[in-house]
Length: 241
Image 1 (cartoon, rainbow, N blue to C red):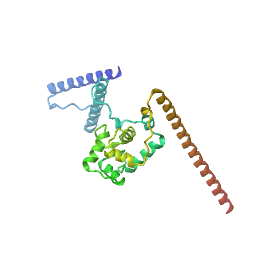
Image 2: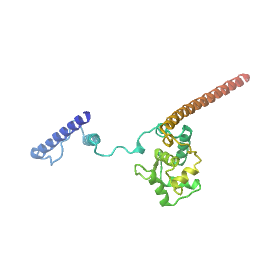
Image 3: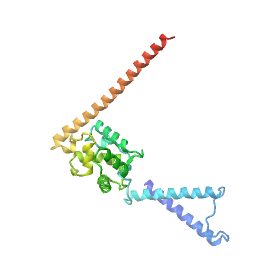
Image 4: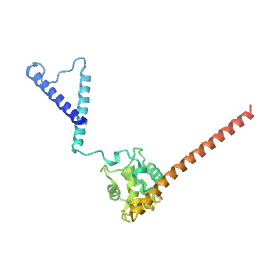
């Protein structure tokens, strides 16, 4: 396996460097235990090279650990995800509305809603929360324990609300209710039987395609209107020449 080969090469390289340092300490005289600088490199360049080697070593070792099941993979909120495929229970319009609301309160434009931004959101919605209440709201969907909401975690609020998994007196339930985003339609998971789920999955797929076509038609319409306005403007210009 490529990872095992890289780890083996790295181990061999570190062993050779260790042997080189031992020789330098034993017979170098004035070396003072310092690693000899590589020829053709000044002190800064040698230090940068050493830093790069250390970073590469750390990455290779982490990759080997993950391959062997050691260490934790990347947190869910930091993975690149497609909301339309992962949250199939919602329509494109619903997800776009949620994204619009998320960006509206992401004042720092860093892709997260932190405690203070959530505080402002709840105040704007007319349901201010205590400091502890805000922390509990984040904690309920905070998958990576970074004490803030990613867009994926924000969508989890509405998934839980649609599935009836939020307590009515909880801050997240209030947020979902006051957001004016209708998530009452049940997804495939809410179907009572396999056949109902099958039919509902087809309906969701058809609805998804219809929404894409509607968006395309809207863009075509806007482009045509723009073209007509430009033509009318040129015609108006020609009358003054």
